Length: 207
Image (cartoon, rainbow, N blue to C red; front, side):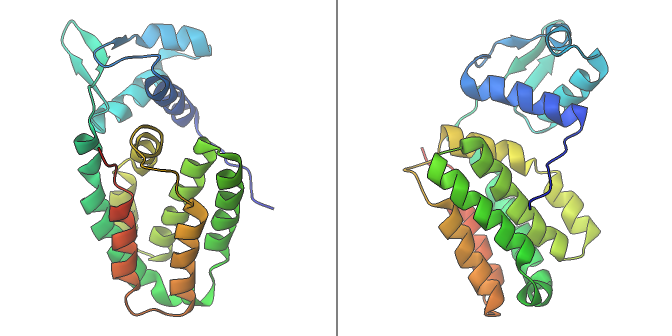
């Protein structure tokens, strides 16, 4: 059984704001009012402020004196910027984790099984969640805290959400794409780092 996903309050609020941006509730240039979100979600303004600060650090929103926080007008090119950096990090992670994951791919296979269900039902939220979890497992398996921290700082979940739901090309089998990576680990493919790098780059949004 897959363990339940537990999110902190800040993460839940961040996802709420992100969903509002993706769905068009807040349009580019529109102000996001911290106090209104706090009242709507029945929380204090502190975790809302933390969530907004995180989204601003990812350049999804922007703030200006006396103007508050507003949604940036993002393009596919904006989203693509993080992918070469992420691809390089995951190439290193795959090479470091190769031996460990060749012996045990159970964690990766659980995410692939969940992706199959998400693909079958067209559940975009689940596709994002399990795609990110799959890649996080690889980075964790590398056993390098600096690498994991750097990867986490890229806001992979945020950019994956926007890429899949805004700029994704024709529907793709997320499960099959990731099963191929699992198979490469299991057969101890010497080019696993290059394969994973190419996979990440292929996920970058297209205009």
